[in-house]
Image (cartoon, rainbow, N blue to C red; front, side, top):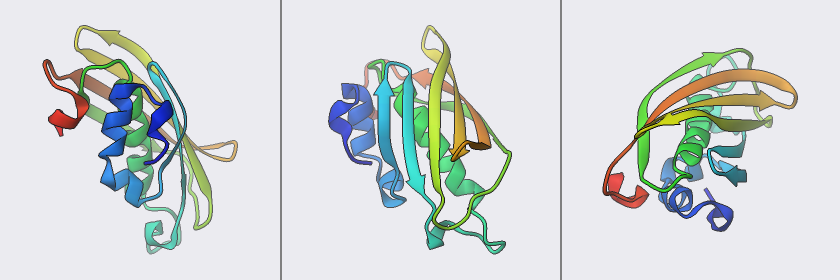
Length: 142
């Protein structure tokens, strides 16, 4: 990803090292404590045999937004689990936006919801559980 300067330091460090998201053209749009909005344009390499975006690419976008949101508080944080529900489709050239928001944090754990949109249409819902790693920064936890 690019434009890490306006992210919180922890989320910026984690995003700067995220080659997978950068390789698929994921771009940050907005960031705050416990929130993140990212964008990705569906390329020919992301389309499956049915001519629609591969669910794994949609998951990566949602997971990247989740990662930015849960790493916004400072300590390095990783996924403890996630569920992904596809609700619609997208095609080559479509622009997808993932909006992540913190539902709750308790101790070293957190719960985050991400909605992936194509325009105004919801195409996926994602819920991630996070866990902070004591004594590490985002770059050390990879």
